Length: 113
Length: 114
Image 1 (cartoon, rainbow over the protein chains, first blue to last red):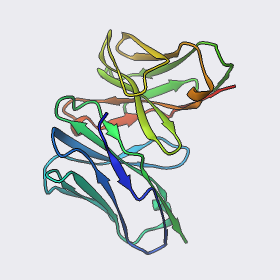
Image 2 (image 1 turned 180 degrees about the vertical axis):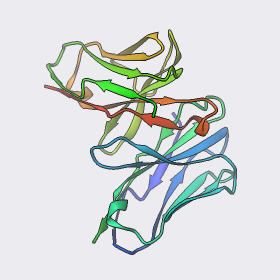
Image 3 (image 1 turned 30 degrees about the vertical axis):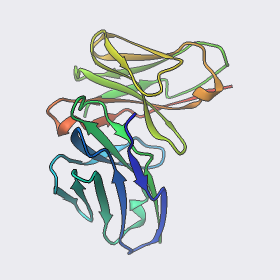
Image 4 (image 1 turned 60 degrees about the vertical axis):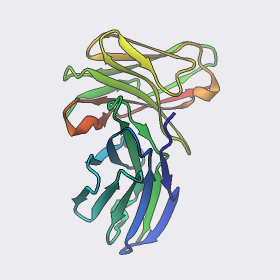
């Protein structure tokens, strides 16, 4: 079983704060790292897929970076809004079986107005 | 839109009974997955399939079986339901060469075993 860890487990911030969380994954046999956003009572939705070391992706106020050599990815949210409240999941795809992702347990973000 | 439909959406069943959950997709995607979601555990892979009659176990496969006799349907069966199998079950698909195997999820099935 591959070890994919996310921290912190939960985070409470005020509207307007910027925040970040971490996903750590195996530094070998890497194919891709996926970030998903999961709102309560809905299904997870894809945010980013990252494949290259040093990659940085951005979508609005949310961005992510990737370090495959040391096995971590950061997700940043700038100027958090209440609608950013969700659980953010990362998923590691190994090179030997790229279709079979292992998920972290998620970071649950709550943004207070 | 991958057109993924899970049925039923909700089910309550008794301990010891068999239960089958269905995942149906309309796009002829080969890769399909069953995950379960439990508090504090994120999503854990039960079984997956890379095509008709091509299935394999995930990390939490004990007590579950799957079948894929048609590309569009991936069935998950709890052979004899136990309370520990109370969970939300998600089906997903991925497409090789598209978003680097990123998943699209169905809406989930909430199963309660009493």
